[in-house]
Image (cartoon, rainbow, N blue to C red; front, side):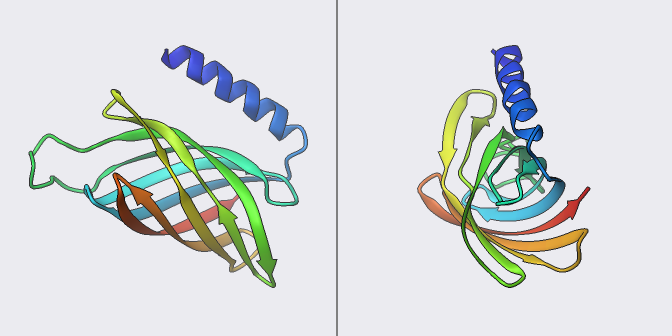
Length: 143
């Protein structure tokens, strides 16, 4: 199953990268119902902002429910541009993937990105995770 997902993602990435203009690495913190989580990812975007990426996130420290529960999430995100205003861009960034390698989840999310320089951007996110609101901050490095 993991190999099939990896093959699909690589195929989609190869198709998108042929017209892609930006490859970005991202690191973020997100406050969810599972606690404070850290994450990282890699995304490819076109000139117009449409893109796809791979993400991973897990708890920063142990939760109340158990010392071993980190709720790791591995998945993909799609980046759909909504509007642009100067150095700010607004995206719909839904994510899909597996939590604890058992449960498939869809995470609707919006992102506001502020371009600081040609190489760096900062973003704030808002979404729904496990039927509860989640908020986050991101740093993006455009490679």
